[in-house]
Length: 286
Ligand code: GUN
Image (cartoon, rainbow, N blue to C red; front, top):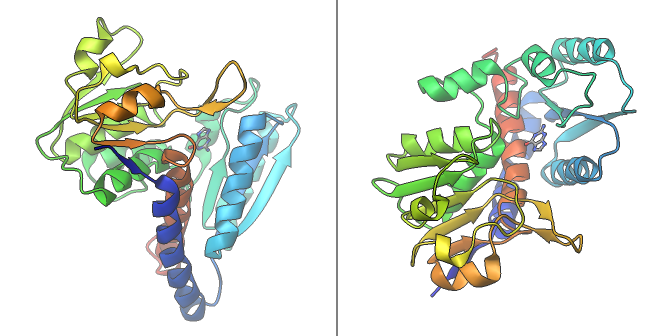
């Protein structure tokens, strides 16, 4: 039997709990957490992500200031904006929606965000904290995937985990978080030879390569847990994941869907990270 793990339901219950915690903190500290969101340009995917983030923030009681700029924005302007947000005592978290237009170097911008306000967990200090097991802000998508596995009581310790994709946002931190939970981790990518022979050994398979319905049934082990991080549009402009869900699901013990799987958990973890940054801020930890 296959269990579909619902990221939508898990995110809903975690956001309800977070909302209560934020109401209590409002009484204690006299203000709500605030997230600044920066969007440059009008990419349809980015616009939809930013709307989703603002909606979730509203649900949990986090204030959002959204700064939406045209795609001819200069790097200098954005640098000055980030400096101002870093210095603003009312702002707890800063999120710059990626990708940025070509004239703006995203690594320069990410490094400029205060690591204490970097709720995406992309700043080199937070990346280093993950790799050195220091306290820091964890990136939202892999954090959400671990929460999904835990919510279904899927054992990670000692299992073979295969991560398909090696991006800084998902594949790399995902692999490290699974390793920290004592999985035996293999990272696959576009140069991997005979990908199916690797993925079909996975007890836990994380698909994060960004190709519509790429993971087919024959690439998946019977009884595997499959987590689909993909968020693609197919040739009919239909939203779909990296996993060929209809054919793969019958083979799995657990699987997530797109939409309604990892996406809502990414946003939920962003809210949780903003709250953690706010608490650290209010408690004078930074
Ligand atoms: N673009 C795609 N995914 C993400 C994300 O997790 N954070 C930001 N800031 N931009 C993204």
